[in-house]
Length: 157
Picture (cartoon, helix red, strand yellow):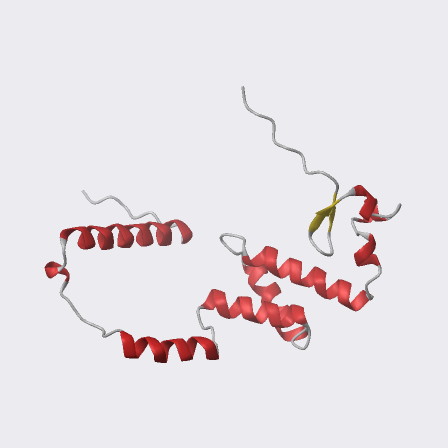
């Protein structure tokens, strides 16, 4: 017999994206899915929070559709002076792989350079367990790429 899925207590607030107790919602707040705390916020702050939620939802879809990318680009341009626009731009940079390194990370790199020396070793000269781990990691990355791109190579005869 399959165990029942536990039902979430309370209601979901679409502004702050949290489940809260019934007492945290006013009479009309239940049906509008807005808690008392969020109802008291200014309209522009509420709209910005909703946009941040939409960006977060779009970013963590796998795979992202063209509409998701367009939404991120639109929010990054249109609301660049607001939190949602900056968040959208950060997520675009993260997804595209062109993040700007933080100053703290640069300082860490300088410290690490003095401690570690980089060494190049041919693959054939690696220890067997390290070579096996690298082969597994490479195979996993190739499989993830093929699944992400929905690419299945044809069998060779």
